[in-house]
Length: 107
Image 1 (cartoon, rainbow, N blue to C red):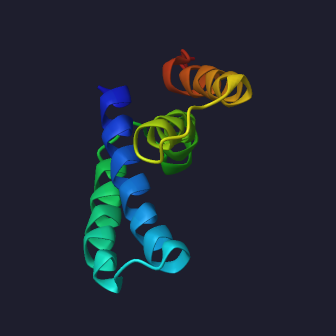
Image 2 (spheres, rainbow, N blue to C red):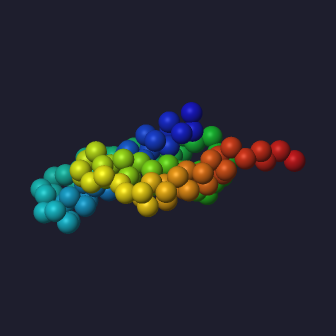
Image 3 (cartoon, one colour):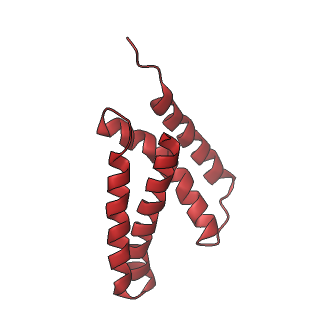
């Protein structure tokens, strides 16, 4: 459940941030900022649905998923295929996220 939630949050965050990127860097119509802001609000709401006890732990685990999702965005939306270094970095980040998410913290 956590990975699905983080995946949806990543899509919302990346979409929202890309709206700003499009306006400020690519010269797109400023009206793109409205759905971008909505997307960022959805991102924040989704992240609060995490089962993590602490916000910092949720953010840290989410970070690995965000990095991998960003590379999917790079490929599917921006048309640039991630290289081996992108993929190696994403795998390292996902491994770190898995440690944070699935560690046995029982006393």
